[in-house]
Image (cartoon, rainbow, N blue to C red; front, side, top):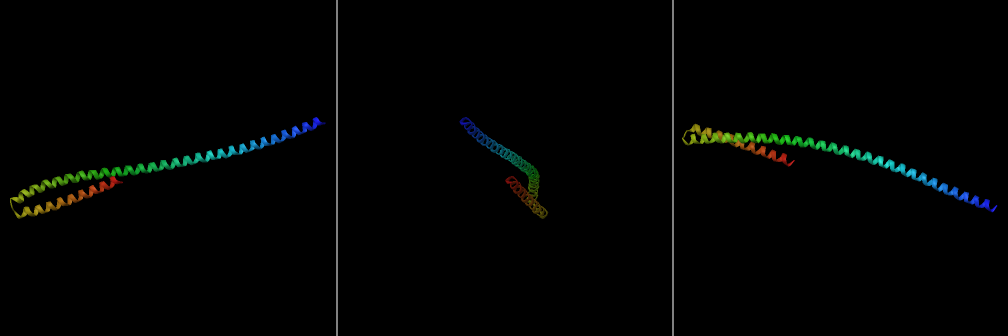
Length: 137
């Protein structure tokens, strides 16, 4: 009978240990499931952020291309205005020579050329300011 009591006590201990192990396994399974959900959520978040950054980069690339095009147009306009200023300066020199020879008509022509030259210089200055503003962007 003592042996039976000892076996029964050992069996109870074994059953209690088995319950503890089973509960531990259940806890581990739940923790693993929670971790799996966390990993899945983090993966989704990384994908979402990557997509946002890609869209932002594409937008900035488009803006950069637009500003580059505008800078090129401003540069071309500046070259054209510089050529116009040079042409008008040469014309002004010719008018000045004729004006030096005298004549009221040459004086009027000189004033007209000076006005055109001033207008061209103003336009050139405005183009340069626009170019600097675009470069600053």
